[in-house]
Amino acid sequence: MKFAGSVTAILGQRLLVVRSDAGQLPPLYTGVADAENRPVGKIVDLYGSVSRPYLTVLCNEGVCAYVGDNLYVIPESKPEKPGKKHHHASGRTGTDNSRRPKTGGSIWKKKSRS
Image (spheres, rainbow, N blue to C red):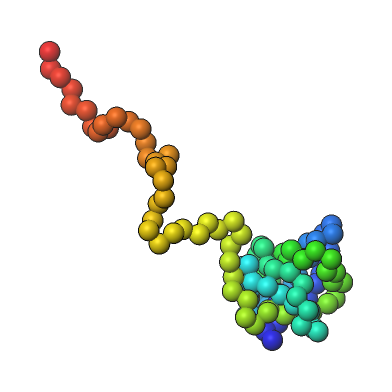
């Protein structure tokens, strides 16, 4: 298993601050597990300096970790952004054109000389 970092602080009930190694920085939204390979949560933020990065891990419901615990990247977890919409292969469905401006014509109107 790839080392993700060690827990340095616990924020509230579900957030962990994890000190990571700059050479082995895992990607966002990757799952992490403890030393016994039990899933702990997923990485939701990366911050700090390039040489001393920190991770914020959102823990799963009912899972706890302690300061000093080592966390590891779950080998087969595919990073996926939360709230990502899945589109159909045919493109847009329905008649939702809310993204297009409703100008009624060209924005380059010719001025009349009267």
